[in-house]
Structure formats: structure tokens, C-alpha cells
Amino acid sequence: MGHFENVVKVGISEMNVVKAPWKIRTTGLGSCVGLVIYDDVNKLAGLAHIMLPDSSLSNKEPLNCAKYADTAVTELIRLLKNYGGNIMFFKAKIAGGAEMFPHRPSSKIMRIGPRNVEAVKQHLLSSNIPIVSEDVGGKNGRTIEFDTNSFILTIRTVNLGVKQI
Image 1 (tube, rainbow, N blue to C red):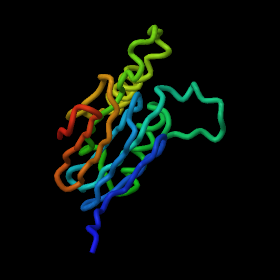
Image 2: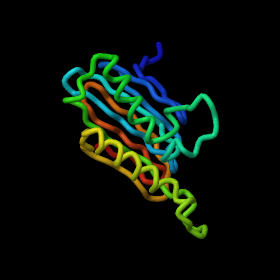
Image 3: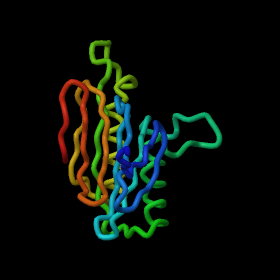
Image 4: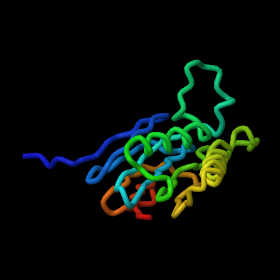
């Protein structure tokens, strides 16, 4: 009999919310940022796989709010509240934001990873949500998984192994 694991998977430019005992995971974080906002009192967490820093870059309707840092933070907070979360208890962990092509001539517009990290941090700060820990930057892709029982974010980084924050 196979081992069943309670894990919800979040794709690129997607978000979701889970309650304990569920875990939530995303793969393929290169320049993208994985944002986890969690409520350790009510034992729930949301994860957004953010691709770009600012929704003003979009020319599509309807807007995919999970794709952009500015709209993803706001929407994830709203979803967590809908699931019974209390913003007074919200905390964040972030991972990703790598520079996947560091050897190319670097213009500001091409530095998507660092710009994503900065945008996520800015929107969390303006929402009064503290960042408890982070694993950002570098040149390698990541997979992350958040456990709503332990509140540990496990990060698997290509060529660098596994760590927990």
C-alpha cells in the first residue's frame, strides 16, 4: 500500500490555502518567489508562486493576481482571512528570487529575481506582516514545502541540498 501524503501543490502564478495537518508545496522557483503567509494560532497557511514584481506589467484581462507581488500579497491575505485566519497572527517566510542568468549583461529590467524579492518584502511590510525567515537570491532553483503542524519551510535547492527555515 502506498504512503498517502497530505500535500497541496501550487503551480507557477497560482496560490492556495491549507489547514493543518496539510502541507503546501511549489516547485520550479527560479527567479519566482514562493511566499508563505501563515497563522500559527489557527494553524493555516497560504502559498503564492509569484512570477513578476508588479501587476502594472500586465496587459491581460482578467488579471491573474497570483502572478504579481503587489496583487498576490493582498489576495493571499484575503484568502487566509476567509479561511478563518487572523491578520494579527500572520507571519511570512519567503524563498526564491534567484538570478538564473547571472552571466548575461545585467540591466535592471532583467534582474527579475531580486526585483521580485524586493516587491514581496515591500508589500508585506506595508501590510504589517513580519518576515520570520527567508532563503532568497543565488543562482539555483528551489522547491519549497510548508508544514502547517510545525510551521517549518523545507527548501530543496538544486545542487545545494535541503534546509529548513
